[in-house]
Length: 416
Ligand code: EPU
Image (cartoon, protein in one colour):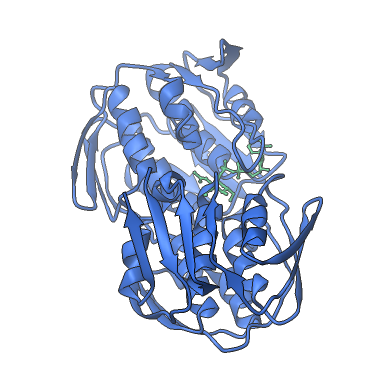
């Protein structure tokens, strides 16, 4: 498997182009299942999770063509209602086909995603939502089997704000009879983007981006041409890299409106940040100030940025307390960062990070996407060489990360 080798100690300067958002592209590509005819999606990132989505959709009978960052999907031939274990185990977000399959084919058989490195990640709220719309649901042989002659609008309350849960039920409800109201819905920009794509297909969705989403069912949808929003987590990762190396980095094709909590937190650490339209400039400072942070559902500080921020706090002036409130096991990077000289103590869902003056390069590895990204960041400021093994996870969610870092002055290479 490929490795990424980083030599630390180089200031990052220059311009980096942010790709389309993985977590917006996944549900939006899957929403193509809801209409016959050719949908066209632009700004789709080139990622392993997108390859898995394309494989999943073609397995279900969709016809797909890709060219550069454009993906065209015609789900007119949708004829298979099963998402097999082999695809779902590689990408948990495959569960997003559950709602659309029941809406389109009246039944679905989707492998249950298991837990993963960051937590147990149950899907009970996806199932509760779909059952609320009238689907019959059974778990058999490790698969969710769902069926419904027709789905009917209903009031669905999510006990916890769930991103893919909200997306799944929103996709099921667009073709249901009557009105569905989702309460305590997640408010992430990716949910707004999905609602916009669906509305352009002819759906009638209101309130996406708030905790109450109303979906008036329609009888059919038409294909759409849609541009995927910029990836706020990729953007945040490069912003932290700039702050970490005392660099001066300009992000282009970013969406600062989606980065509020990250921008606020980075400013508190001393970084200077300005933005204009889709451009964000980050100027790092010699001294990084420690700040405390707590991950929260959007618009709070994203759990997907916690590991990267912890690296920044590892070399900051002072002590930082970081609380992870979304996933129960999202400190996988801590043991690897400690091997690089970080001073971090974990107690329950809280990590106390005492800033050290230097990290030292080491061979490291992580079993989660954002944890892997944090190890690259650590490598950028560590003394000597850091070898990040098992690049598989990085390739799931960061497009050509080593090329983008090399383009702004990092000494980094992929070794096959
Ligand atoms: N939860 C339940 N029951 C459910 C669903 C969720 O208890 O049925 C709990 C989860 O265990 C967690 C909380 O609710 O404690 C929030 O989880 P959520 O469902 O929102 O997470 P997700 O939809 O599975 C998405 C992103 C993740 C991101 C989280 C939180 C996609 C494809 N994935 O996951 O992204 O961390 O929201 O923002 O959108 C990543 O990109 O690296 C990544 C992990």
